[in-house]
Amino acid sequence: MKKLTALCTVVFCLIGTEMVSAQFGNNNRFGRQQRSAIPQAQTPPEEPKPKTADELVDEQMPRITQEIGLDPFEEAVVRSTLVKYVTKRLELQILKLEPKKMKEEYEKLADLQTEELKAGLPEDKYQAYVELEQRRFQGKKKKKKKKKNKE
Image (cartoon, rainbow, N blue to C red):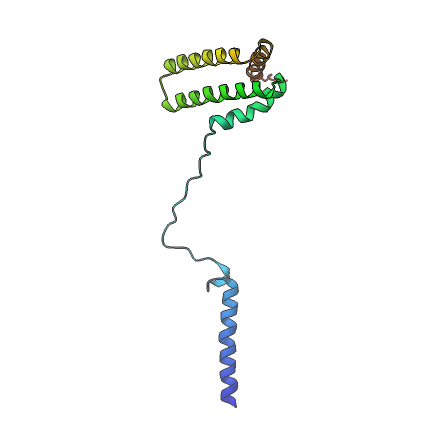
């Protein structure tokens, strides 16, 4: 009988220590994690993917359509024209030409886009588009901060 109780006591102690060590995690004392001898490589954060021409134009089209009041046909003309020339501009950025050449190419694309929009839109809506573009660029001027005189 004494042997049976001693055996049961030993079995319960072993099971009890396993349960306690499982609560602290991986048989480490006080729940500390063991450090690996192999250093972990740090993964660099993913760079955001550049937006496509379609995505860039899709962001602007609701505003353009609303402010100018385009019908579905005119909206399709403006959208296709903008996608075409935004794509060409993105291709130029990828080529990374010298600044002078890049400026010339951008000006050529701007002229071609202007001609195509003029041909595809009525005069009043084309003028409204030009005014919208001018307001978009004028709104980005930086304001100078005033310095306060401390006396």
